[in-house]
Every structure is written in C-alpha cells, then in structure tokens.
Length: 355
Image 1: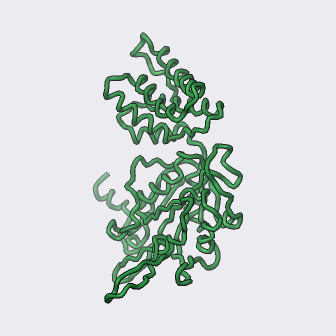
Image 2: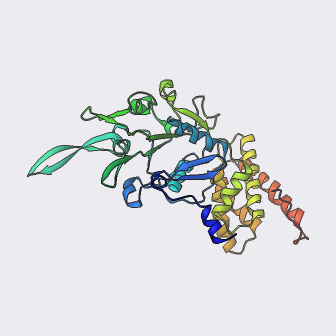
Image 3: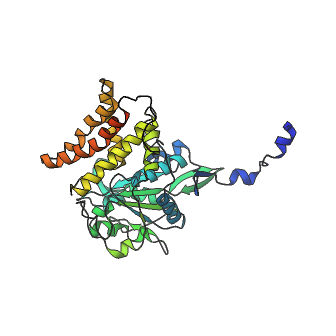
C-alpha cells in the first residue's frame, strides 16, 4: 500500500473533531470521557496519579452505567475489594476532578459545606463565612476556553458512608436528588448552593442496608429514603484473574507463577479464617501486604516460600489465641507445603500452579 492510500483512510481533522470530547476505551464495554482540564486547572481537586490500573470487572461497568444515567451510586462490599480505588483510578486515567471525603464518628458534615472563622480586618475582629470543600466541589470547577468561562463537574467520593449517623447524611439529602433541584444548604447563611449539572456522587460502604454478614464492621442504619436516592452496586469478590492482574501490575518483578501462588495462598488463608469464625478480613489488600513484606525477607536471602511464611506473621499478629494462629499456619502449609513437595527434586519441571 502506498503512502497516498494510507493517507486517504485517515479521519479528516475538522472543527467538530476538535470540539468533541475524547472517549477512552478502558476494557470490554467500559468507556469514559477524557477531561479537558489541565493539571493546573484541577488544583485542589487533582486526582491521585494512576497506578496499577486494572478495569474490567462486571461491577465496574455497573458503576459507570449508574453514573452515566445521572444517579448517585452507593458501592457496597467487603474491605479491600477496591471500591474507593476504582473511582480514584478512573479519575486519574480520565484526568477528571475528584474530591475525596471520609465519614468519621463525630464529624459535623456541615463543616464540609461552610463554617465561620475569626479574622482581623482594619484592627477589628470579625466573623467570616468560609465555604468548605464540598460546597466548592458542587459548584463545579471553573475554567476558561476561548474567553468563555465554563464549569466542569467534580466527582465526589464519600467513603465509609455506612458509618454515618442519619443527622450527618441529612446534609446531603437535596444534593443527592437525581430529579428536581439539587442543592446544599449553607448552614451559616441558609443560602442554597446549587449543584453543578453532571456532578457525580460516589458513596462507598463496607456494609449493606442488611448488615455486613456478621463481620463486625462499624455501621449505622441509614434512612431508607436517602438510600433510595442512590443506585446500589455490589463490589463482588475479585476473581482470581482480576487479583492476579492487580498484583502483577503492582509487582512486575514477580513471575506469573509466584503471583498465582500468592493468590492461592491468600484465598486458602481467607477460607480458614472464615470457617474458623475469626473476625479478620483477607483481601487484595492482604495480598499486596504479603508481597511487600516478602520482598524484605527475600532481600535477606530467604527463598520465596519461606518469605511468604514469614510474611504471614503480619496477619497472625492480630490474633492472641494459639488455636486461631494455628488455623492460619495450617492454611499456609496446605498451599506452600504442597507446592514444595510437588517441585522438590525437580526444579526444572513446569509449575503445578494452574493459571
């Protein structure tokens, strides 16, 4: 094919192309729009840097469907499933503004909206109303193009919303409306603060409205009318394939066989912990901790298997009862002992780990 033939197949560059938002294809049917904002324009709402980005789970698509339909979304799942991580990385990849907030037991959410502070002006001390981060975020992020000022909607992440008391979440009632007027109420002046069209509310919780399955997470029963304003998404348990991708992207120096062994190991420990009724969460976060610690033991000359055994002390350290600690030891040896026996005397044999 000649250069001329290749050129003819290119999409013509027009003004319409330049003004159309750039769409990113992330995985399978997952698509997102690239933000037009520069790093300087993002300012206080700059998302974290993208790292170990892996998309493609079904619940990821459920989240985008809910947000694209214009609804606040409430993502429920066990600790360590990647609920907050998903929206942080989505914002990072798309370069979109993000505000991250977290519920605390004694927090007055009104302070996210506005508060008063004392200032000295002209020799006199006066009270001044200061807008909080939530109020600034719902107004949208101002930016200018071709002399025209516009506002870009901000994604607002509020984590641990299941720990919120009803009086705390009440502050968000009108802002979470998907139909009708959306606004926050300034607690000092009573002013209505309009919510910029396209603002996305993303709430995460470790417990559903029906509890946390007996895991002992601190949670409070939310007003059902508040929950009804959101779309619920269950962050399901990660598939082994998804977990391997996350770990491989974060620890590229580890072989596929080593990564697969860690996934099997932690799933074995998780099963033992659950069957023993031990209130300990084992998740992708646990696998990351295990690989982080094993690297330290490897640097001291330990084999990979022994490094993993030593890393398990970080989880047994939460337990006082010898029987509970023995449960974890048994789960570890069920995986590492079997692997050692299978490969002993045959170092060049193919790994028995099933991909």
